[in-house]
Image 1 (cartoon, rainbow, N blue to C red):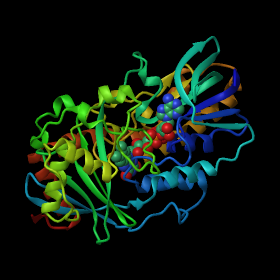
Image 2: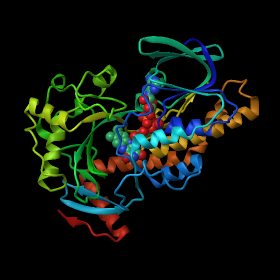
Image 3: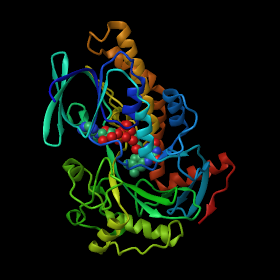
Image 4: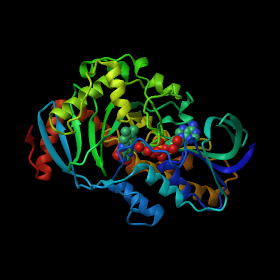
Length: 426
Ligand SMILES: Cc1cc2nc3c(=O)[nH]c(=O)nc-3n(C[C@H](O)[C@H](O)[C@H](O)COP(=O)(O)OP(=O)(O)OC[C@H]3O[C@@H](n4cnc5c(N)ncnc54)[C@H](O)[C@@H]3O)c2cc1C
C-alpha cells in the first residue's frame, strides 16, 4: 500500500473517532486508522453518562441501545464508600451499563459513507507536515507505508499520536488497573476512597455475571508508599494495553508499549491491599488473595483474573487541553477531554467528534477545504465544546477536593443534605 490520498485521516476508532466518522460532511474522503481490530475489548468501566447517551442519540438517531451493547444490572444510584472517614453515602446517577467493546463496534457499524476506508491493525507511528499535506507513517505487520491527507483528526486516546510531539505535550495521566471477578450477588455501582490505597478512587461495577474491580493510581514514582507494599516492576510485567484483548486468556506477556511501561509504572501490591480491604468489608466475593509481598503469588492471581491496566488522562488544569493546530485536530482523550474526578471520557469523546462535524462543515462552506485550517476554525471547535470545558474545569476542582479526606467528608455531608440521603457510618 502506498501514498493514499484523503481529505481527512481519523486516527483511532474509539468513541471520538466513531463520532467524527458519523458526523463529518459526506463529501469528504476519509481514511479511518486503528492499531486494533473491531473485536478488541477496551479497558473501561463501561458506564455511559446521560450526556454520552444524548450524543449517541444525535449521531445514531436511536433512543435505546441494542441488546448486545446494553449490560445488566442498571442502577440509578452510585454508592460512595470513604475508608478515611468511615462513612458511606449514595447519589443519583443516570448511568447506563454497557459492554464497551460492543458499544464501539456498534457505533462504527453505523458509519455508512461513500469514500470511507477503514484500516484495521494499522499503527500510525508519526506525522509529518509536507506543504499542504500531512504524511502519516504507518505500520502493519512489518509493512510500512505512508498515508497522505489534507487534515488529521487525532482520536488515538490517552496514547495520543500527536501529543508525543514536544510542542503539543502530553496531558497528565494516572494509571488504572481493573480485573473481572466471577460474581452473581446483587451489588451496586460503588466508588471507594482511601488514601492508604490511592490518591484517586477504586470502583466495583457489576456487569452481567462479572464484577469489575478497578483502581486508579498516580504515577509510580509518587506511589511507593501507597498500600504499604512495593513490588519490583520488572518482576510483574503486565499486559499493559490500550486495547485489552478479551480473547487473550493470559494477562501477562510482553509489553510492546515501551512508553507506557516507562511513563506509567504501577504497583500491583497496592491493588492487592485494596482488594483485601474490599473483601474484608464484603464488597467483593471471598476470594483467596496472595500476600501483597509474594511476587509469584501476586503474578499468578492477576494471571488467573485477567488484570489489565492502562493510563487515563487526569487533567490538573484546563490549559492541558489541546485541540491541535494547522490542520491537525485533536478529539476525545487525545485532546485531554476526560473527567479527572470520575474518569468519564466517553461523553467528551462523542461530543468532540460531533463538534468536528460542524467545524468541517463550516470549512467546506467557507473555502471548500482549499485553505488550511485557521485559528477561527479552532475557535469554533472550542466554542462548540464550551459546556464540556466548563464541566471539566469544575471536575478538576472536584478531583482535588475528593483527594483530600477532610474536604471529601464535608462534600459527602453536603451531598447527602442536598439529595436527602443520609451519610451512614461504616
Ligand atoms: C479503567 C478505565 C475505566 C474507564 N471507565 C469509563 C467509564 O465507565 N465511562 C466513561 O465514560 N469513560 C471511562 N473511561 C474513559 C474512557 O474509556 C476514555 O476516556 C474513552 O475511551 C476515550 O475515547 P477516545 O475515543 O478518545 O479514545 P479511545 O477509546 O482510547 O480510542 C483510541 C483508539 O485509538 C487507537 N490508537 C491508539 N494509538 C494509535 C495509533 N498510534 N495508531 C492507530 N490507532 C491508534 C486505539 O487502538 C483505540 O482504538 C475509563 C478508562 C479507563 C482506563
